[in-house]
Length: 407
Image (tube, rainbow, N blue to C red; front, side, top):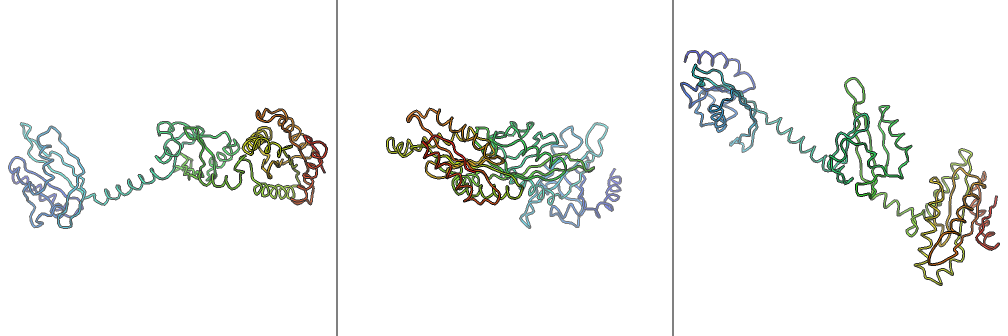
């Protein structure tokens, strides 16, 4: 038997001593306290490399194999760390063992194993895991299948939406849809990504608690080896604070409609658009009648509440494409794209009626006067504003609570 072991060792040693895999073998029957190994095994575990036979207690990891020898398992596999004392660093090894031979009574005669230094692989995997963990906690990212069903989301995504992962995975992103977000945006998005292109844009969504948030997102399709789209990855950026600041810069703080500076910007854009595409738009200026009397009689706080109610009436009874703003004091301005003087007049008449019939509770019989003009070719901002203002002046002089137009 001894000759058999020596022959076995001589044969595999010639091969494995030149490989990058360490090996060991124990003669459990004749010499259970020692193990045989190749040179690489000796180097990895700081053993005298001029010998191929060493005491088992010289390597701590053999304690695991003592349990293996007592069990009924014929194979063993484990990844374990090993402290290299000379360099004071931890290495990682993949250890696999197998019973080579048993006697007639079932006792183990020989057991051998392979040990592979996987320190680099483990460190790389740990680095990747750390990187993935950083991404998961800090990057708002999601993955959907080709039907738009969410298959994976990051912890950061859950944090911004208020949902748990199991509440979103398996559903579509429409669970977050804000009613203000137009359907055309989603149609454009899907048309782009299903054609294999990337889509980016800004979307207002709803959290689980009903509060709104804004994200800037980039959607990229992922392809399989045949060039077919297999999923979509969405990387999002929380721009809620940016939108709040942006909103503050363009909105009137009292009524939450556009402020005068933003109205000037919108007027410039409408005129530029009309000049380029030969379209038309109408402009409405309205002024709350006898508003000074309201402030004098009830105070500015009540006056402010009335202005807020009037701005809500304007928002409720105009089109989504119309731009409503506070022009100054008790004056409001409405820009109506793609509309002529008649359309503007009809809108003003409807608004006049709603204001007149509205129950303001504290102060009854509140009315407003209106002036309407229409863009004419060659107009600048002052031209169209002056005509609307002159029409408003006419309404005021003729007894108020009227609508007048000026071409």
